[in-house]
Image 1 (cartoon, one colour):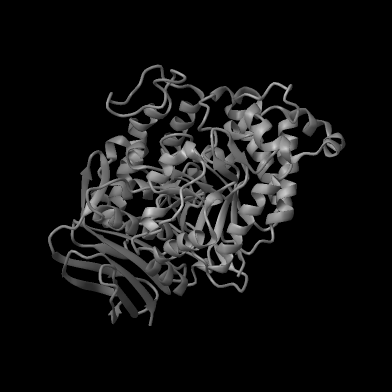
Image 2 (cartoon, rainbow, N blue to C red):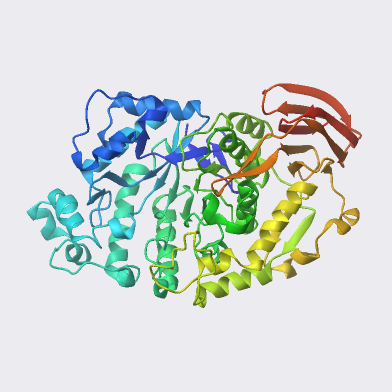
Length: 571
C-alpha cells in the first residue's frame, strides 16, 4: 500500500493508518554474511573482489533470491524501509542514474526491479535522487564516456537541448565544486533528469520519500560556494515538489550531527519537508561521547521545533558484544518518536529487534494524527545558534581537537569550523541540557526565536533548583533511570520510555550497558482524569502488564535492570 506525507509532518498509509518508518539501511549493498547469503559464484568485477571477501554484494550484481533474502533479513530485524542511492555498481567510475539530463535506462531497469521486490515484500524506499557531484557526468569525464554516452544514439544527440549537448560533449571541461552549483546548464540538466525520473518513479508503490543527494556540501569543503549550494538546493527541492507531488523531500548533512553544518540555517533557506541529519559516535560530539543516545536526542530536537527531523544515517559503533549497540538502538527507536519525529533511519543493517514494539505502540496511539501537548519548557538557544552560524561565515585558524581525534580540516582547507563547534561551550550546553532533561523527566523544545513564545528559559538558567517550580507529569525517582515521554494535547494519552542503564564507553565509542538491578519507580502528576489505564511493556522480555492507576501517585516497576515503555490512556 502506498505511503503519503500528511499535514502534521508524519507518514501514513493511503487509508489513513499510521506508518512509522524504521530502518533506512543502505540498500545498494547487501551485507551477505550478516544476512546469511552465500552465493555459489564469484563476482565478475575483480576490481572489487575485496568487497566480496568482506561480505558485501552490490544490488545490481545480486540475483532475485539474494535480493529477497536480504530484504527478508531486514524485515526480521524490524525494518520497513531502506535508503537507496541513484547509482549502480561502484567501479572507479560509478554508474549514475542521471546521465546528462535523462534517466540511465539500463540502470533504471535494475533499480525498478529492486523497488518492485520492496513493494512485494512490504518494504518502502527513501530514494536519494541526485548523484553526488563528484560521481556525476558533470564532474567526471570517464563517467561521461563509460556510463552516459553509450546510452545516446547519434540521432538522439542532435535533438537534445543545447544545455544537455554541452555536458555530453567530452571536449567541454568538466565542472568543479566552484561552479557546479552556479552553472545554469548543470541545473537545467538536473531539472530535466528529475522530470524524466518522475515519469518512472513517482507512482511506484514502494516510494516513501526523496533526498537531494547524500550529505550536502560534505565532499568539497569549498565554503566559498556555501550560499550558492543553498540556492541550488532550494531550486532542486522546489522542482521535486513540482514533479513528485505529495512525495516529501529532504536534504542530509554529514555524520557530525549538529557539530558540522547547521541544520537550522539549511532548513530555513531550503523548503524541504523534513531535515535529515547523520550522526556517528565520535564525530557527533567528542567531549560528550559517553552517551551517544543523549547526543542523538539533542541532535533531533535541535531542528525538530522548526522542521520535522528524520535521522538519515546513524550507527551505534563497534563494540566487543552486541549489548551496547542493541541498547543504543532501543534508545533511538524511542527517543526519536517521543521527540515527535516522523521515524528513524540508520546506516547499519542490525535492528536487534528493537523497532517492532516501538512501531506497534506508536501505531496504537495513531501517531500519524497525534497532536502533542506543549512541552513544559521552551529553551532559548538563540545565542548558541548565532554562534554556530557565525562559525560557518568566519572559521577559526587553529584546530580545537586533540591530535588523536580526526579533524576533517587538518589536511584540506586549513580553516577550522567543525572542530571549533565540536569543542565549544555552546554545543556542550545543548548536550548537557539534553542529558539533564532525560535524567529529570523534563519535556522541552529548543527555539532560536524566543519572542514567539510567552516565556522561555536560557540553558544556563536551568538546574535542579528550578524543578520545584515546574510541574512534571512523569518523574523518574531513581537517578540511574532516565525518562522521555510524549503527551497528547488533551492529556488522554501519555507514552513514556524508561531508560534504565549505565553509560559506558569502549574504544572511544559511546554506549550503555545493563547495571545491577535496583528499585525503579515513576511519580505521576497527570491532568485530565482521576484514573488511567496503564500498559507496562518490559522491553527486555516483551511482556505487558496492565494496571489501573491514579493520575497522581507512584508507579513501582520493581527491582530491575530492564527498560520499559509505559502507555497511559485516560480511563
